[in-house]
Image 1 (tube, helix red, strand yellow):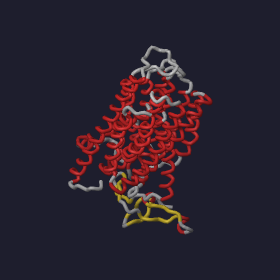
Image 2 (cartoon, rainbow, N blue to C red):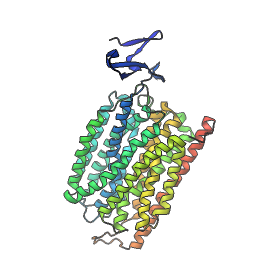
Image 3 (cartoon, rainbow, N blue to C red):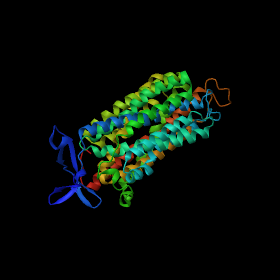
Image 4 (cartoon, rainbow, N blue to C red):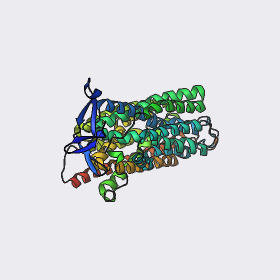
Amino acid sequence: MSNGIEHRGGKIDVESFYLEPVDTAHNGLRVVEAVEPISLNTTAIPAVRPTRNYQTLLLLTGFFMTFHVIGINSVFGIFQELYTSPETIIVDSQGQDALVSLVGAIGSGLTWSGSIFVNPLMARVENLKIVTLSGVVIMSLGLLLASISTRLWHLYLTQALLYGVGSSMYYFPIMSITPIYFDKHRGFAMGLILAGSGIGGMVIAPVLNLLINKYGVHWALRILGIWNLAVGIPIACVIRHRPGFGTRGRTRMNIGLVKRGTFLYQASGAFLQAAGNVVPTVYLTTYCVSVLNYSRSTGSLLLALNSGVNSLSRVAMGVLADRIGRQNTTIGSVFLSGLSVFALWYDAPRAKYIAFVVFYAIYAGGYNALLPTTITDIYGVENYASVNGFVYFIRGMGAVFGAPLAGVILGTYKRNGDTGTAFAGLSVLQSRFNSVSLYSGALLVAAGVCVTYVRWLDARDKGRWAWKA
């Protein structure tokens, strides 16, 4: 077989065509000219149109990836409550909410901020399977080594750094290439993939609590690590570049883009939203146990409820975004999530707090699901890799600072069974959690102002206003 096909007076690579199965012709393949011109190196050639089968496989793969990565991130609140309680296995973590939350903040923050090195790596590596598989192994190793940790600094090295670096290498290959494989239904595709994070949290929270109660936290971490490795290996085998698009393109930031107000406010909104968004889930179990006097099992079930509703919301937000505009949906999502914190978490008794768990899950899903698609819409596919990488780096920094600062506001306090000297007054503890809720809500509303201004700046830069955007 020749290396090229005669086409309009010249040769182009066979890879420039879309191959789809047919009965017998052309050895089971039909050659179809792609309809969208792209550029690889310096020669313009037709793009590769993805098959429906591969798109479906990519959606399933992405769903199960976020099931693990974001699902595990979202249930760190269970570890938070356990590590800071009198039953902790970490000798220097009891009552240290700010320091322990930093473990989860670094882990989840690196999941996003790792994009600053993962995206350039993907642009230089021909086989994305290697990047993804390496991430799966490193992430699982972090969980396994955390199972033998006895000091807080051990957790920083294992459940924070190793886990975070690995999860980023696992997360970004799929998240970076998926928007490029979809056009008309990009919002739905990303919403479906990110729904896996909610389902992951919904499933992992009660399972993790059951494992901790039955086998202890050591074996719970080991089982989680082994499970992640067993599922992640086949997922890694699916990932590949789409020739001429996204991650094979420019990964260095265009200075002209950086200087634009659109980008500056986009990055600011990402930082503020991540910082505010992480607080309610990290401290959900702690609030349930320490203020509402629920058991840890009930707290894990409410965390699972939050994740499950959030999963459905991400799909619904994706569908809604395709109808009314992705930026419009993002703005509404961020503002409503902030308002729900003010209205329902502040000074919340049991019934009010359960309502908060549900409504916050509904509203918070939009921004997380739609950020990659809005980046593509605003900056174009040609700038997607570089902008996506930097914005997620900023977002990761927001996650790193959000929960620990909330822990500083919360301070130390006496839990059930704690014989320490920290204060034990429930009214004082409720007051401090009220301050935490105000802190979280203010960050989210500020993020809403930023994304609204991005919407206006984008319309101005494009020279036209459209109600659907």
